[in-house]
Structures are given as C-alpha cells and as structure tokens.
Image (cartoon, rainbow, N blue to C red; front, side, top):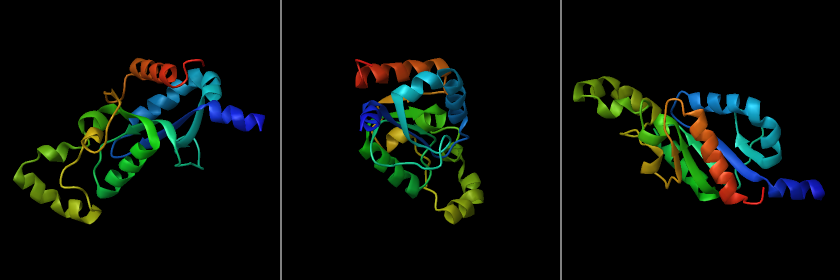
Amino acid sequence: MENQEKIQEKIKVGWFSFSCCEDSTIVMTEIMNEHWQDWKKLFDFRHARVLKSHNIMDEFDVAFVEGAIAGPEHEEKVKEIRSKAKYLVAVGACAVVGLPAGQRNNFTEAQMAEIQFLIDRFGALPKVLKVSDVVKVDVELPGCPMNPDAFLKAVDGLVKELRPNM
C-alpha cells in the first residue's frame, strides 16, 4: 500500500510522437541520462514507447506531444490524449508550427498532383496540422529539435505547478 501511495504522488507523464523525425524524443532521453535519479522519484512515466513496452492510457498530469498531425487517426489520438491530460506540451517544430513535416502544405498544385496517390494510399489529411490546430496546447517548446534548456525550464515550471511541495 505504501508503494502504491508513492506512485500516486508522482506526476503522471505521457510522451507521444506523431509525424516527425523524433529528434526531441532523442533529446529527452539524453536529458534523462543526467536527471534519471531525480526523475524516477518524481515522475510516473505511464506512456512513453521509447522507455517501456507496457504503456497505460488512463490519465496524465502532463502529456508531451511531438510531431505534426497528418492523418485522421492522429487527430483522434491527440484528442484522446488531450482529454486525459491536465497539461499538454507541444514539443518540437512539427508539433508547434507543423513544419518540416507539413512541407506539402506549401506545395504547388503540380507538386500536390504528383503526391496525391500517397495521400490517398495512406489516408492522410488534406493538410498537415500543428497540434494546436486540433487541441488546446498549454506549453510550446519549438525547435528542431527542442532546446534542452527550454525543456528543463518547462518541466520545472510544471512540477512547481502540479506538486508545489515536491
């Protein structure tokens, strides 16, 4: 019971990736090399495919979302994530501005005609969306990849907001 109470005290975190190169995921895992001893006491990583094979999609204090929204299944998933998260952080350029993953949004008609078969084959949206086009975003961490110092500052701010006594 005591161990369960400790887990309940931890900040519930999810890390999700959509259309992107996942460079911010790599940065986050590199940051963990220096912060793991503190973070394992502070965070309950409920969903982070890069860290574990058994992931839970129930509730999150903070959900980090990397990547642009390129398909209907992405839209549905990011809406589900938002509904389960107190705070949603858009991570990286693709999530914050939709680029470079959304380069096709700026294609000419001729260029679009050339790739239309791919859009059809993969059931992509007509336009690639940034995360805030689909759901409310509480914090944005731009960059390709995100700036590690900005990430740590955002994490610290969220910890102070969610667990002021930790």
